[in-house]
Length: 242
Ligand code: C5J
Image: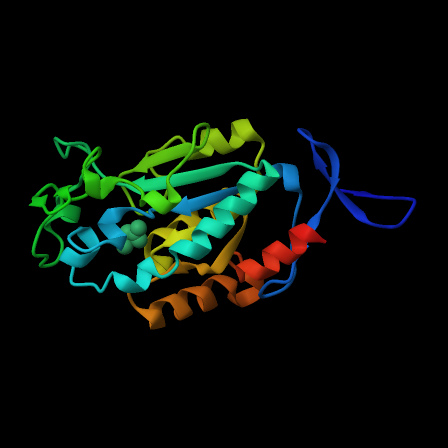
């Protein structure tokens, strides 16, 4: 970082955009700053299988309507990144049709009405290319956006995400999606261990269990942001507009 001699503002190095002023968001547990040329949005698993009736989430016994409620906020967040020309990355949890990348322990877990790979109302549950595996229409990726297919809960495990972020020169991740305490938290912990500073957008993430969302947010931001930061979308929008 460099201190601007003229007005004392802190500047971050952003190779793609020259030297850009840091953007500082009012966040928990304290202000989150990022160099705009080095931040990417990661939208976790906004797929029909988690968000719509008849998919993986519902077959596990969950009420999916809670997750549907965040779609407009996630759309606004994606819109903000697109307007700014900053990278948007989408993830999808799923498996190959032969289930070769699905550990038997994952398929056998619990007592769902349909297991991964079974035929459901939106095609085979959590299988690449099936209607249920797709991202909901309102949040569909556009040309040029990276889509990461992940077999696990974390977006770094067995994917190209780390290499993609290194190629883009990204150091800061803004995170959204579902579910807060499973794939979102796992991805943020993986990112944290890899040296990324992560900001979770509180109203652009959701859980089937409100108490788990609240706990996950507290866990991640406790101890001085042991995993990362959190803030509402309005705080990010205000910071970008300043
Ligand atoms: C789950 C996810 N809940 N995307 N996946 O199994 O959080």
